[in-house]
Length: 130
Image 1 (cartoon, one colour):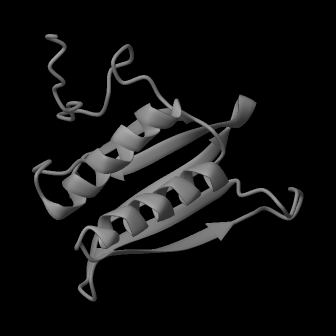
Image 2 (image 1 turned 60 degrees about the vertical axis):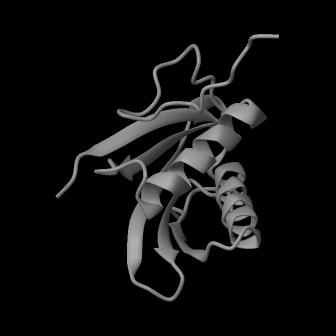
């Protein structure tokens, strides 16, 4: 079993799930075949319109699941984002996560340049020479 990593991101689980869906759609439009399905649960005493925790299974095409993302609402509309550490960030799951983290950075959900990112993940190098 691989190590589970955790990243705290700004935004609710619903916002993060929408971002996951958006990245899957974006990658699929570029010729990839990512899919995901969400299962979530809400305790009886919570509001019906807010996701408090969710599990999202990531798959590649019609193949079996390649990874799982777990989300849990934290105070102040933050989310705990847990996932198994990819053995190789160039794997299908690692690539999906990398694209997702780049989108998190772009949207301001997390500042990976100031905050330590997930173990082994690096933002793409941008040449600032000009």
